[in-house]
Length: 273
Length: 315
Image (tube, rainbow over all chains, first blue to last red; front, side):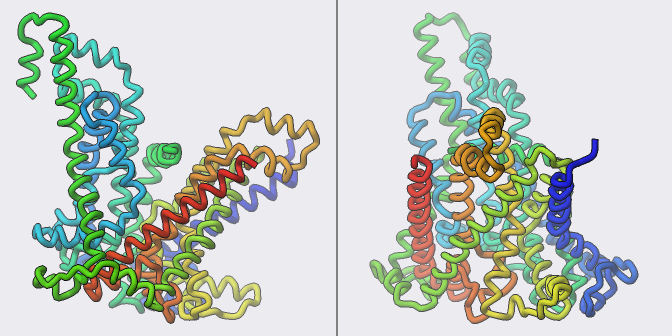
């Protein structure tokens, strides 16, 4: 069967759109391999005249981007683990365990989603300053220790766990915490995977909060390190592109591998109405 | 924990009493499991929000950081100060442009692309979905830097591409007329894939029979979109437009990295103004007031939008 002209046009538009969408990322990659100065020539070259890794080498030796990379990894991994623990516990509790004040507390948590994050940012900074947490990893981590979105997400899934399953475990004499550990947690596997991908990427990409709370460049996360680098090396296009690649590549790779889980999170977030 | 387990396994208890202790145990476990999240969110979110409200009513500034006793309560002074500052009105106007022009454009691009991706004759749907989504997962700071170079007047690819169509060079980020649209293009590019995904899911939930019935009645593609697709999509559309608008109200990293709010403050958003006042000049009282004004604006705009779209849905 021959495709209709309309269908051909449609697919052509989509391919052109896809190309435009990835073009900035492809150019970033290409320019990061160009010899110094090549990107600043007219007309702008699309491909490196010769492939060089010197910018990556410089980033990881002189400019200590490896340190920022490690900082980002540390913050994202610890933040993700913390959110998984706190959200799985609270999500299950709000879904299945009757305790006094449950509905009121849940509503209070949900209302937090209405308040823009910036509203609490300055006072949180002052609070953490008093606690001596400014310019520490702990300070960067504070917003990632618990998540309203995570609780909400886990609660949705935990509600589907059959009560009979929990009750028969209770009759068998299992304690509540044991039930959480050995019955509830295994059932939450997929939603926790989704939450993990989500939190990891958001904390990896976060900018405003680490910018506010960190002043020592030895503790900078990648986005903050990159933003300060561009101040000093604005002329070094190829170097900056290598820095952008180092920052973007891990999350992009993670997305390609774990697409399914990430997309589930987007969908779950969109049906909260 | 072991104590509960031991208690659970000891002896035979009367049924009624057992049910009571079970309920008590459940309540205790529930509180215990919810406690870490609830405590963290109360202390590190609601606490600061309330503290911020108080802060916005004080003259907390750089001196107060050294000596907190120097703080004075000044009532609505910071808010009145904001209303008398041209910089505030400028930032508010620009933030409104971001939210009321940028967000609708972004939603329109997402919807148009979603319709194309969802069309019957489209091949490789998952591939397109993934490619269009890719910018969403990238780090904003990194791609903003990339776009800064793309917009470079002499060597940037944007001008090179437009030059092919005979369009003269534009100093995108250096010209007060072009800097804001340039930032919006970056923002749309970065975000449209997110809503695209939600729209595609919504489109797949539109019952096929409705389309078939409309087709039998001789409705054109455009009529079908207007009378079948759009009404069916209404709840998704409301969700997407409200959340997108809220995000555009909070635009910060794009102007911070690309223009620092310039040229001539033409891209200075409210959040950027708040950041500068708070963390560059340490006027924390004033900056807290700006945050609450932004909050009020967002609440107001959300309420208006929900009311409008609900009325539209009923009509």
